[in-house]
Amino acid sequence: MSAPDETERGVLRVVTAVLAGLAIAAGLAVQIVAVVVAAHGAADTSANVLAGQLVTQSGALAAKTNTQLVLVCLGLQAVAALLIAAGSARLMLARYRRPRITLFGYLWVFNFAVPFGGLVCTLCAIAVGTKLPRRERYLPIQQVFEPEFTANIRGTVSYGRGARLKAELQNADLDTSFRMTALIAMQSMPARTVSPLLQSMLADPLDDIRLLAYGILDNREKGLTQRILAERARIDGKSQPAATGDELRLANKSLAALYSELIYEHLVKGDVYRNAADQADAYASTALEADPSDASLWRLRGRLALDQRNLDAAADMLQRAIDCGFPRERMLPYLAEVAYQRRDYARVRELLAEVEQHGSLPTLQAVLDYWHAPYETPTL
View 1: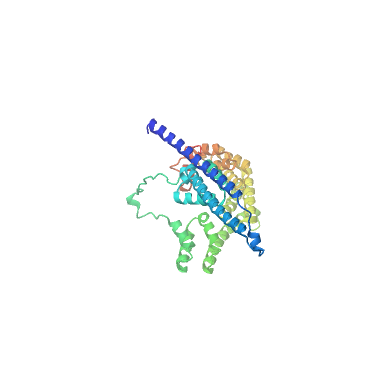
View 2 (view 1 turned 90 degrees about the horizontal axis):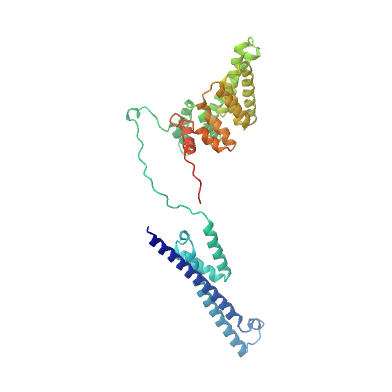
């Protein structure tokens, strides 16, 4: 666009705004004239008529005069509302002018029904509209290409199995036997992945679905509980000789891992969750007294502290795990979560910048894409 064209458009906008202001001023002047005309009306004889008194010739003339004044005032008010509506509609921002006929009709009715007050409200609405952020209704269209797949593995890869089973389970309109089959098929999937869905199935309207979901969760919990009892028996020495030395350390480490598994498979809640977390941390702490260089136990305690929002302890333990030899690459997401809970977003971006995108898990990929994107200051 050339400079002269831009200048001409600027001049045109100024002229249009001036004309709109003149139209509003003219409408306001007409409203004032209507008020002055209404003030010269004759004495109202309506009270005499309602009281049953005879109307004299002068009273009839006064009533006729008042009727004519009312009609004149209504006409003047209609003209004033027309001028104000035309000027106000022109002063509106371009994104508020459509549909034009509806906007003009609304402004005319509003200013006709509320003399003076309608003009004040209209001007206030225009002022507020200039401060509101602009909404992008029509976003640019981008071309998306079809993904490319490796032809030789198409027959061996199953896509979306977990999502398909979840959709089938949550669809109450499907046949019961079909949903039961989908629920049984979920037993082969990782427990920590399907446990939240199985928990939601406990409120299913069908008894068979509820019982099967409860049975799957209960069997998993019983399996872990039996292993916990077996490991504790090794420590207590009630049914067998008590473990000592390195065997005792391994037993404490196994118990810490088993209690933490109850948590991460979503098998415990409330007070039972807090008890499992305390037990896992206690057994891990006992095992670390025998071997302070066990990086996996420092990681376990760090994750437990992070779940309980003990951020300082979590950061120290996670860093201790790295110092003891745990791969820093695998610990970065946890350190970034600690920084996020502290609202240190610059540190989050710094830590996630070290994570390799191509080697990360799919569940972490969206997080990396977000934090790796260049930061832009939001504009209104």
